[in-house]
Length: 355
Ligand SMILES: CC(=O)SCCNC(=O)CCNC(=O)[C@H](O)C(C)(C)COP(=O)(O)OP(=O)(O)OC[C@H]1O[C@@H](n2cnc3c(N)ncnc32)[C@H](O)[C@@H]1OP(=O)(O)O
Ligand SMILES: CC(C)C(=O)C(=O)O
Image (tube, rainbow, N blue to C red; front, side):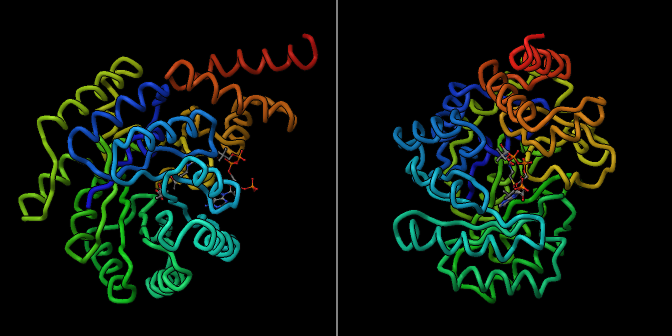
């Protein structure tokens, strides 16, 4: 019932970056605690994400391993090549919904129907009318998708709203429903639990709740609440503590203990910091945004950062910069600072123009 998303969503937390070895150690500790499903990567972001996924699949840490990817044929094929199950997401942009349904059809026909699990996320659900969420869920079921994920991507939903959405979807489709709740207002745990009361079959959670901006639901909290409510939760909390201790050490070493204060809802600074490339245009509730640069960076984010810095790069230079940031973050296990960014830009100018 609980799906760990620390290795993917967690890697979107402000200031975070993991090496391949750190991701694998986290996966091992989380699986030792009895968590049996995990979303471990976004393979189209970088070859290190492909490598991590293959290793985790080979080592059988989890009963079900998922890779996440855009609703693009190349992302879907790449995930399938690792042996992981496929989690994809409908883009925030309404004009791209139909195009993504064609790709989802491709994913189901090529890899689904009993081979790999195909999960599809309806992202940014608070932007939809309820009737349209229900209609889209029905369409996904008819396409042969195995699971539907309802994502409150910007952390705007309340427990009452999540209950209502999940309840309506569950009365419409027979396939399992998972939820993914962000914590900008501090409602991620309450929203996840109210979704379970409304019939959600799965809940995404991360160690310390880390993720994009100030993250999603905290795994240990969700597990404790559901266990107290007599749901079957096979988590060994003593072993789970090892995963928490390991991640706390990484955060303190790489960032600062201040991360935990900044990660608080409402007033925490992390709420206004973005990492994931594909939704650079959707900053959450704050207009002023900061950026965290790691393996999940994309060109839309870089264009915004460069424009803030008053730097202009051509397409080739931008692509090289994206690649260098990703490589550096994975190699060092640390997000790339703005000072490093300026050095990387100089390096590129030197490589291309010999200056
Ligand atoms: C809500 C969430 O958290 S979803 C998880 C998001 N996670 C991430 O984005 C992390 C990984 N991302 C990355 O590494 C980079 O974004 C990459 C390598 C995948 C892509 O980088 P870039 O090609 O530079 O694109 P960029 O990051 O600017 O993203 C915008 C592009 O993604 C497309 N896109 C966004 N979401 C989706 C989606 N669900 N399905 C299909 N296409 C999508 C946009 O339409 C846009 O395409 P365009 O450039 O052809 O106009
Ligand atoms: C990929 C999806 C589930 C996501 O992270 C979000 O919408 O917040």
